[in-house]
Length: 213
Image (cartoon, rainbow, N blue to C red):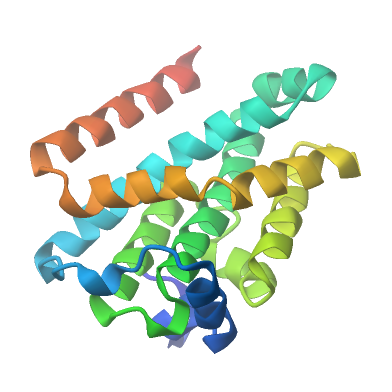
């Protein structure tokens, strides 16, 4: 499965990780960088990228439920599967992109960019609409905190929720959840295949259950 800009042009790594302004942001924040890590084998990138997308999806669901209150939380929990999956897909893509920014932006090593690309591909395999390409084309080039807030607004719009205080709160929660992203990143990059396979299996069974209940 490939991400495409149009039928004849494949989305490249450069389209996923934005320019040097994000790399500067990362250095200023003195955050973890993948440069210190040993590159993962290329034949494991797709599997580990998929595991990372799955972990991030689960975190976004938890942050979504944590951030919404009252009627909005009820709307989220009772929304049709297609709508809630689309909303979570948007936050998943934003979070994967944030992981790239926090890791070094345009200065990320090639193997790490490929890993993130595979995570985005996995998010499309799980929920195609909206595509990862469309989310990042719309929001990937703006500053990280604003990107998180605008992405949250887009996600809540999928559920017909338009309260500005809610999407600002959700966006800031996503942006500030760096430690959660880091833990998922460490597990996806260095966890055993057996452990990651368990993560993927549990996630698949949870999704299957949601479709039949």
